[in-house]
Amino acid sequence: MSEVLNVSMQYTPPGGALNSGTMSLQKLSSSNAQNAGYLDVPDATAASTAFTVPFGSIGTGAKALVVHNTLSNPLDVSINGTLFGQISAGGMIMIGVGDTAPTANPVLSMTLTTTVLQSGLGQIAYYVFGD
Amino acid sequence: MATVSLTSTLQYTPPGGTQVTVPFPISATYTPLNVGTIDIPTGTAAAATYDIPFGSVGVPAGASARVLLIHNRDNNQDIGLRINSLPVAPAMLMQLPAGGFFMIAMPVDPAANDLVAAQIEVVSLTTADAEIDYFVFGD
Image (tube, rainbow over all chains, first blue to last red; front, top):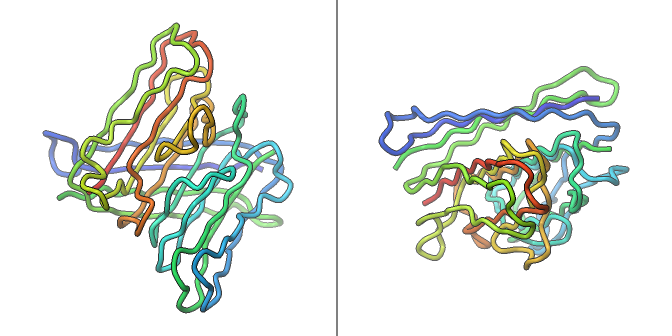
């Protein structure tokens, strides 16, 4: 299996014309294991409820990872056990590692934690590829 | 105030299916921005660190970066990564191999744990000049 992450960005650089700044990059990888799906966050889920992104059999580190917060509230985000920030409502995190594994500190886990009482059914989309 | 627009996609093949393309369109308004390239000269020692310039992004308290992209673009080795000074050095959140990238994109500020700092670390003696691209947009 192969997967491709594409990022295209448009912005206004200092001194430049409106929306004249562009950037694009692409990262390809080939994986034997994948986990993609939705984490459902039921109505009335309490704040500080942790949801672990399923890595399944990916044991040597993610080659590509995307998490999209489609809740109406922010999520605290931990990678490899370290809580380092939040993803706002509608926000995402995208990591393109590729086929060359890092020499150390691969991405082996991700946890998403609710920050407020959930109102209504919510979902978090995730995609993890590796091995 | 301006707008940064991202049109990111993921292409993959789900089990038993055919290839799909998943779009993740995100736009965020910003006033301060910092974009550039960090050069890491040949011979830079392991454990050397470089702060990603956030400028006034995240100032005053309560403000946050809405888009952060770090691309290990022209480099033949890994870089270590810390976000918001976490985890505490010498630990690293993760490593990005050559060509790898890390991106957080949010249409609005988070409610807490604002995105206000990022740091990269050289993981071994550099054997060739390296360039790391960064993009930071915030309020």
